[in-house]
Length: 135
Image 1: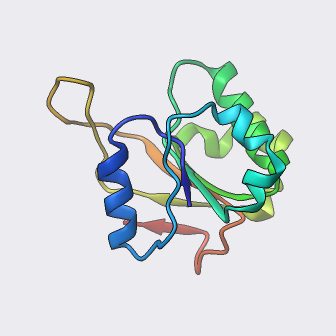
Image 2: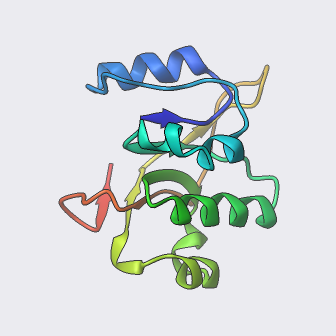
């Protein structure tokens, strides 16, 4: 599993290992360089990330890169992604599934965690038992 999120590297890695993932790659490196590195991409099975919400252009670039890579991925995104034209235009919708968390807490550096609504885990190519899962 490759986890690209920059924050809380040790915590995320530890949590994923507790869930049973044996090989977790979590380093502070340029995502776009790694996704275009064939040796690296061949060494991983899944990309799991919480990309920055800094703008539509960056989200689109991340989604296009991941879909083009052919790798399975899971991204925490606003739920509006599920009915967006972007997703319809670039993805095979037959490979799209989602996990809808009942609660998501967002923590800004140096601040308390706050509930954040309307996020989903967009799953692509993951072959989950159901297309929509609530957790």
